Image (tube, rainbow, N blue to C red; front, side):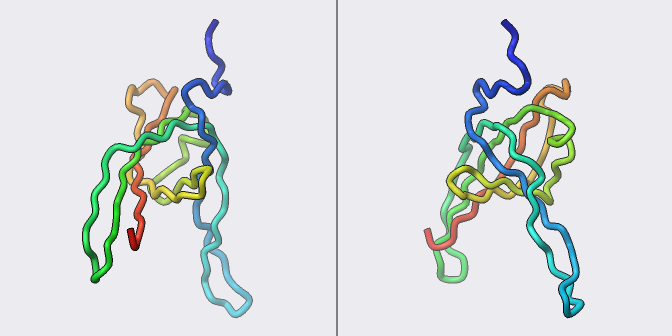
Length: 117
C-alpha cells in the first residue's frame, strides 16, 4: 500500500516553520513580528557539532538536516525562515534544496547555536 503525503512515516516530529513579518509600531518604529508559516511533519537529523570560544564565552554550534514533504507551503521556505522543534529549539535555515529533483521531498540544512554551552 502506498503512503499518502499526509502519513508521517519516517517524519515523526512536528515542527513549526516561522518567519519575520515587518510591521510598524504605534510610534512609527519598524519592528519585525514572528509569524508561523505552517506546521509540517519532519525528520530532524543531527549532522555535526563543534564548540568554540567567542568573546570569552563558550559557544556550541550544531548542524542539522531536516527532511519534509514538498508541498505548496514548503516550496516557499527560504533561509529567511527558521524552524522551531517540539522541544522549543530554534534551527536557523541555511540552505533549502530538493535532493532528488522530484518535488516530493525537501532537505533543509540548519544551524542551532547555543550560547554558554
